Length: 306
Image (cartoon, rainbow, N blue to C red):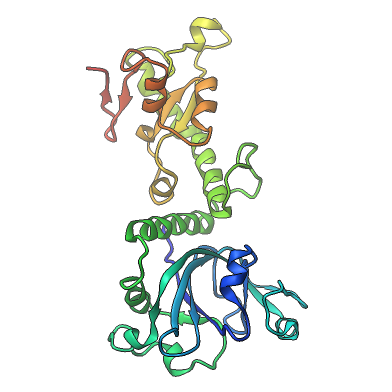
């Protein structure tokens, strides 16, 4: 299950808050809001809309929501024209700015786009942050913004996977021991699901049965066989590694063919950043196809080395 990302516009008055100075000092990690307090969700996409003259008014930055709205008083980072303005604000939305546009997407241009001409920021600009954007309004902005479409789609897909997994109760709250190096909260959450899927006993059992049907349980990277090295104790022992990219893995049911059977050492190396595939790790060991063991296709048919 994948849940849709929502789009929000956050208005900024440069005469009240020096947004670009705040961004240069890495202090922009939340935005004051006064409505829709419970609606923005982790991973929702946002744009910063600067007020001012016709040549400056419009979208100046792109980012995303990184948490739920929280309450705090007296928040200021030194970039407010009047610190008392910050003290009056009590609700804050955590955000991350991912792109500062080299030139703004101007309001005067967006007004001429039928997809954006009815946007609330044009009709009710004094309503207060945040302003909800429709998918069409968001597209009208992004079509004019020098931001990679591929990277935006990848983020949206990842966020949808996280939300779907969370809604299904498939993301545990207990952190994994090796997730500390993952920088983003959404990345850490989906990594936990990745590890849970590797431990799915039913799928792991199916994958091991497929491998034993044509031979032994050997590591698909280095060829190590626990049963040979540890007779009796090592029988039927091997670890499973989920091979799909995190975003793709989050939006489909896990299959035996999604698991690679690997030894403990190779499994640890596969989880080292930057992540690599079993094939890449095998090549790095100089094994090429020498160590490759049969792997199942989606229909359960085993594919061996040719």
